[in-house]
Image (cartoon, rainbow, N blue to C red):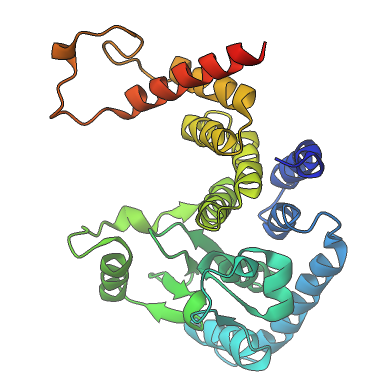
Length: 305
């Protein structure tokens, strides 16, 4: 990781953790902290002010709604966000990294499901709606609730705030996970603020890896471990990213720590295992592959000393 990027990790991690520790449900400050991976000089204040103004404007429009029922109020919010302001899902350039940063989504008014959901949650809550994030596989959603109504509404912010039935959710699951995916109501469970942040970072890390932007992917892994130090798979991924970047000492530290923390498999650390113990027909386990990396790294690091 370039030194300038590496030097920012503690500062951005601290900013992100402060945002997650704030009382309430606000997610925009954390999302803007994540954007500092790409935009180190980003000033969050104007964007937070814009979100506040949007929420106040949405509240005024919902006040004009003559119906107390939930669905007409959702319709009014959708009209404000998608018709009046022009927000939309970026289908044409879904993998554009700008779709993952809240500042860019607010500026360009287009994004992916989770960033559009963050705007939907922030604006809708300020307008007086009870909204929750839904960590649905492959496609982040929003739930609207009302104590006066027996059924919640499931909303797709990526598709103009469309209301989804259970049949729609089943179809969405098949599209994103596979035809054999089994739908379960637990897939519509409420996402905590931390879970939303983790999903944003995981999405971003994967995108950076596809782009072969390994320093930025490693930054995302750093933030994931700051948010959840028990995320051992991120320790593994950060080590592998360091390996790609030829930061062998850091890669060795992370991969050794990963192997220590994960349950050991038989013979994983036996360098002279007999041929009968590992036949050619057997696929090597993940731990075995990581152990091979560790052995190679130890030789490299020893050679530098």
